[in-house]
Amino acid sequence: MKIIRDLAEMRALAETLKGQGKSIGMVPTMGALHEGHASLMAKARQENDILLVSVFVNPTQFGPDEDFDQYPRQLEADAALAEGQGADIVFAPADEAMYPEGFQTYVTPSPQMTNILCGVSRPIHFRGVCTVLTKFFSLIHPDRAYFGEKDIQQLAIVMRMVTDLNLHVEIVPCPIVREADGLAKSSRNVYMTPEERAAAPVLQASLQMAREMIAAGERNAVKIRQAMADKINATGLAKIDYLETLDFATFERRDEILDHTLIAMAVAFGKSRLLDNTLIRLN
Ligand code: AMP
Image (cartoon, rainbow, N blue to C red; front, side, top):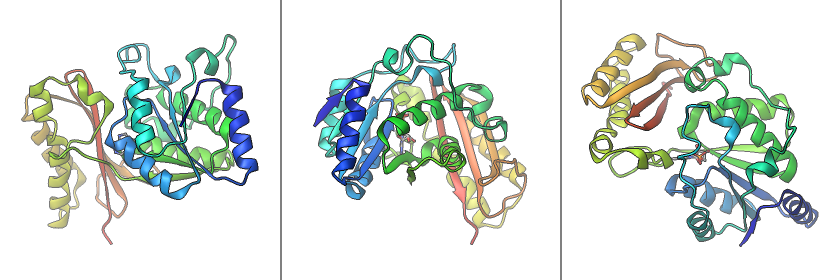
């Protein structure tokens, strides 16, 4: 497995591989890799000749008061995990290489997709995500790129971007990987105290309760959100950033449960801001 830091070297290698007729599956990550990332790599490994994992804590997707400096960085361990998943290449560029002096150009998704959910408290986040992915895709030209459904708004925005900008890459969604107690795996779980960590599975439990209410015939999303919020707040350790029901295709808020209603939340436990969601399929 090769670890590449240089952009020109990355471009040249990708061109050589594509010239040999090899397909490239890319898994973009910010490192601190865990089984959630590994599941994306496993799928990409199966579906492509070359598995490329990028490890880059992208500065442009962090706001000034966010955890860019504290975000865990552990390239050696990440490279070992990627190699264990059969990666051929780990691409870990330096910040200055990706954003040299004079950098001026960003890819900005429309407010319809960013003035809700994570975009409200993280106003520049998705612009940073779309910008770095466009840079990666134009440098590497992967055939497929793999994204987790945990970051469901990111997945929807990236799919939209690839369609809107005619990017020649297939976006492959991958299911959420969870701890044994139901907490979605996340590099940010390490910020929690033992008490917060013990309470955090309430997110998945509240989604399970919502699914049960819907299965029993409840269609009033206001009632469902209230019941979920009560359950989460009962821990005494949670601060709900958002808890929304929306149409998955349009990202418009919905107060009625219909087919393809997305229930999505961000909840802070101490320093960890955790995401979880479920897509309701009625048929
Ligand atoms: P990150 O390193 O947090 O930017 O995540 C990189 C990719 O891994 C994103 O597409 C995430 O959605 C995905 N991912 C992170 N955690 C999980 C998880 N628990 N299950 C599935 N995918 C995940």
